[in-house]
Length: 327
Image 1: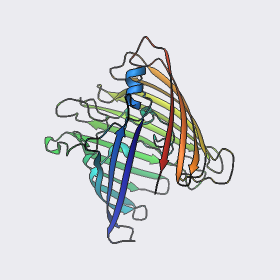
Image 2: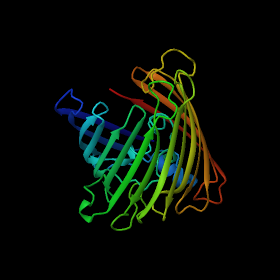
Image 3: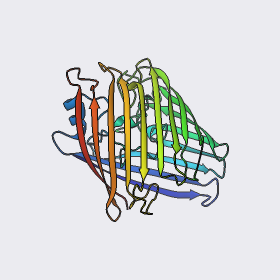
C-alpha cells in the first residue's frame, strides 16, 4: 500500500488575461509507503518484473518535495509557450492524458522510460503552435537533476529533446496529439542511474500514436514504441497498445478527465529492460468508477508473462485498487 498527495498552484503575475501572460507554477508532492511489502517491492522483488506492478511512489524523506517551480509564459493564441525553472520532463515528453498511473493504466511500463528522462531539476521547455493540429517542442535539462536536491547543472551534462506533436485524424475538438520524440543525454556525472537514465551517454527515439475511434470521442486507442541506445535508458526497447472507453454504459455522465464517469481499459505491454535477462510481456485490464462525490476508485488486474529479472518464473498476477480525489 502507498499513498501520495500533490498540491499545485499558479500565480498569474504578468499581463494577466493576455495571450503572452506570464505566471509562476508550482507543484509540491508527498509520498508514503505502508508495508512491507510496498507495491514496488511486491512487483520488482517478488515477481522480478521489469514492467512493474505499480508506479514507484516510494516514500519521500522529507515527506514533501518541490517537483516543479517554474516561470511559464505564452499560449496557443500567442503561438508559443515556454517554461523556465525547476521542471519535470517525464511529465511532458511522450505523455498521454489517457495513460496515467493515477487512474487508468498502472505499470511504469506505460511511461516513456525508453527515454533517459532526467528527474525534476533545472531546465527549459518551450514550443511553437504552428497551427491547430501541429506543434513543435524542445527540452534542455540538467541530466544530473535529482528531485531530492538541486542536481548538478554546473557539471554541464545535458538532456536534450525535440518533440513533434500532431493530431493525425481528429474527430472531436478534444482529440489528443500523437508525438514523436528524438533525444540525447550526456549521461550523469557519476555514471549512476537517475530516474529514467541509467548513467551513460546515449540517445534514442520514442513514438506515441493516439487516436479517437468513435464519433463522440469516448473510445481512444494509444500505441507506443521506444528505442534507446548505449544502455542509457531503463528500457532498451518498449512497446505497448492501449484501449480506453469512457462512460462504457452510455450514462451521459462522460467527462474526458473529470469524475463521475466510468472508464474501462485494456492494455498489452512488451519490453526489454537494460540489465534484464529476457523480454517481458504483460496484459492489464482496469475499471474506474465514481465512488463518492469527487472521488474515483480504480480496480486493475495485470497478467505478467516471463518476468524480465526472474528466468525461473513464467507467470505472475497483480491486483490493485486505487482511490483518487481532487479538490
